[in-house]
Image (cartoon, rainbow, N blue to C red; front, side, top):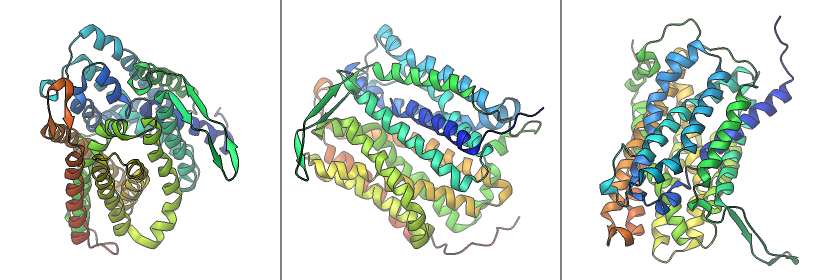
Length: 444
């Protein structure tokens, strides 16, 4: 006898908790990691550390499409992957200490360092869960268009909380607000904050919690049970027919190119903000996700008024402005410029990535829609970010002077180059993307 479905509100709450923990696991180390790497004297591995995620993003479609989607219930796969990923993350500090292989300069970096191998193991487990949490949510929603955004926003909140927790402290100065005196507040729970190895243990603990919690989620059978799989289908190669449409080809190429400078924000922005910001850098960085919540709520109104082309264009323009503000603020450490650049994250992410997913959904025929979305993720989160992580490391090396132990970074040029690159991509997109109404399907 089938178990009756729980009330929608109860399911929504359980899915929201899942999303919160899912992105807490990612946010608790991804931004703060460079701080600890400097203390551990392995800062030269930064390029590889931010390349393992894209590598996992390329590999995970095989796992999802050929194994997880066909043989196991989604909630069980989700739980097992998070438990395995937690083990890898918990082992990071001890493995690095035991290896005693410092890598202070990126010229000495190599892939087979224990730190990189453990990060790769964790990301190989984590990346498939991004798709699994989405598919599990959709399976238990009667109206995904309305219900999913309300569940997914808890993922952004989880990322923010993860940032704040590993930041290790909070400080509010004594001040007056609208005539009301506010006493100062200071609290510290991790003395070294983002420089502490505690971030890896916190991530591992959250992974164990989510892993165990996943087994309690509503049963979600394998969505493609009994179907045969092919590498062509899993990689989304059937969706390549869409590249026959000029506008879609421009969209894919510009999506790939714009993700190259994005890798620099993920891998170096925390270090830059730490060197320039007068407050806790993790709090400053998490304000970008706070703005993401605001702009996510504004998107329907903006989409109606601007349409696909200008939504994507505004998203790209925000990336140009972000790097431009970083570059302009670098010499004098102008904090309001730095904060404004971080706050642009909501526009950068929502207006470009979310609009891109909507554009693909509107453009692709129903039978290859999922493949087209997967191909977009492979191009952006996989190839774009992967190439960007390596190129940005070379860019930083080029604009660094002095001995390894006391390098001076020319942050002005380090941020000016991606600003110029993103400007080129923006101009190319606005000039070449001509679609104003649905195009006819390409010939078979």
